[in-house]
Image (cartoon, one colour):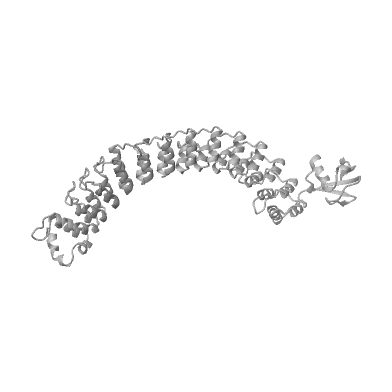
Length: 540
């Protein structure tokens, strides 16, 4: 028998010799079964000599046991232990523990040795530190523990060791992340399996309401999702924004994850706080395969979000032709909208020719609405879309509530190609709006020289007066757009009969406005041979 006693003479225990191999094993036995401190704080003495851990115990003897307190160590020694743990230096860690040194002391690295070893995946170092009494649940200021670090990095053996040492599996850091949510987010299947087998709560949510399933779904970790679903994770658990695993996976385009969630019974029409469903989020991102899968599963294709937008409108807003095609093939309502905003209006405004073509297929375009769409496309300069709308029956001369036609709108915006196309299509260049403003007036007022040239060539009326009685050609210099004047001057001269002093009524009026408004106009408008007329212009 091995007879152990304290130096005071108090008996500790008796152990059969055949059950113990060496001093290290004896110390571990005492720590485990007798409630003694870890072996690093024990000293076994035989006949006044401290026995090393490697000494074999193969015969009966009387042994004295000495228990040590932690040694006072310097900051340098604490940092030395942290570095050794980080780099997996088992021998150095063993030596530091034999001082004995408190394994939970924190140095300049701001992390205990166990956390550093767990983060790096050094199993043997972690084992030594735990044997030395390191706290498996010691948390940093951010609330994270060694188990969270090991789980987040996918170190399954370290995680197993920590769990066996009593690490709390459901502790959360300051952001609400647990070991399971960390492992799930990074796709560490074996760690997830280990934690689930250990009974980790699969539906714990972080501060944003995200669960392990939602995080795994967002990253497309199919195997982790499968494990969580088999463990019974709540597929319809919504985060703080109202998103579920399905809406999140759909928005990220993870087809296989979406399929698994649908097969497990996820609500395909659940909406988040903005009213967006899985179909809407996938449509917004252009994930056509996910869209088709959701449509096959019966997702509501005409549901609208809080803005009144359907999946089709959202797809048009982002120009996803494939998604638009899939939705139309599934029978999505092309006319659905909110406050006159429809999928066709959105795509016309964006200039998405292919989308507009899809939406116009087999569509009887109402004349008034077609004209509105034409004006929108014209204003944005989408020439081919405007042409397509004309072919679909939009009236090129029909005016809106303000009296503006597509030509007037395009002219005011300086959309040269659209103006050319509309004029070639026979648009009336002289139709005024409710204020009497024509296409030539508005293009002149905004200084769109090329548009003015097109309109003049199309015989636009250069004398048509608005309610303010300013002629078309006097608007430009009055607004500082002197570059418009030379383009139009010949048109004036050709249009009006000349007076005997050589000035038409239009040129006289134009010259006066120019000379009154800008000194630069003199050099622009009057060449050297015409300077003698300046006084006459002023007088008139």
